[in-house]
Image (cartoon, rainbow, N blue to C red; front, side, top):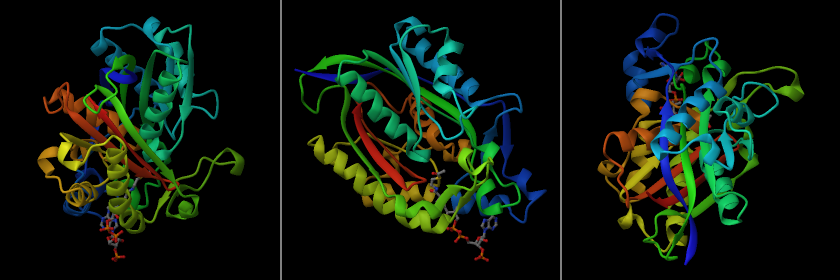
Length: 323
Ligand code: ACO
């Protein structure tokens, strides 16, 4: 027998405002055609001026609780992955705690940029397996529209806002790869690559800053590192690519998603793709894709799911779980 962190609820929230690629044609030297063919993105959602990351996160969290048939009182901890928290402190997670009306337990943020949700899942799993929490809300939520340089066509067309959430619950399994729940995790980072993807501001530099990215350099690292981390995690679960029902990748670029699937020997029929509708929502992209994938009827109970992501740091990793 072995304790496992099992997904018992999933939900998401997207801001109302949808911005098609054509809107950027008015202000930038770009085209819908360029954005579509180079990134796979067709549209993205942007938060309203008065809408904060914690607002998006709370709505996604409530949807996940509803899906699980639970209330905030049933939750022991909130782990929120974000690089765009409302304030320098307190954490966006504690704001979600208050918005949900949860007066016990604990809440904190995790920051690993686009890989944030994978790192948050790892934290939540560790809390559950160490006996510190029985049920954890794991959220990815971002408002990257707030850190865009709207004059930089090479970055501002790529990102969007949104939030997704899971409820993880301790359940007993047989200790085999047939168990439901998280089966294996692989995390990595390498700070030498800071200059490939960063925000040129922050509290200690006394500004908010804007996202800066050497996109083609990040691209080169992405396919190789994502396929390797997914294979490492599968291997430690005693599984291989042939066992995978769904890859649910970080949604940054369709060409990265296709390249990673190919390197893993999997067809695009095994990949949940939402990048066309959401753009890159950083830490929110994987839980958003999990929620949409379930709604579409793609992900079903018992399916083997691999999530993988890479982002600023560089930081990257993968989680293997049975839904
Ligand atoms: N419209 C028109 N032309 C553009 C645009 C645009 N919006 N953006 C860039 N270009 C031009 C460039 O200026 C360049 O022109 P040049 O050849 O005259 O210099 C040309 O297009 C090619 O640029 P590249 O950057 O080489 O294009 P590439 O095919 O690599 O696509 C992209 C760029 C989409 C950014 C891609 O590199 C990518 O997706 N990279 C990975 C991004 C990513 O995965 N980030 C990870 C996580 S994000 C996070 O952690 C926050």
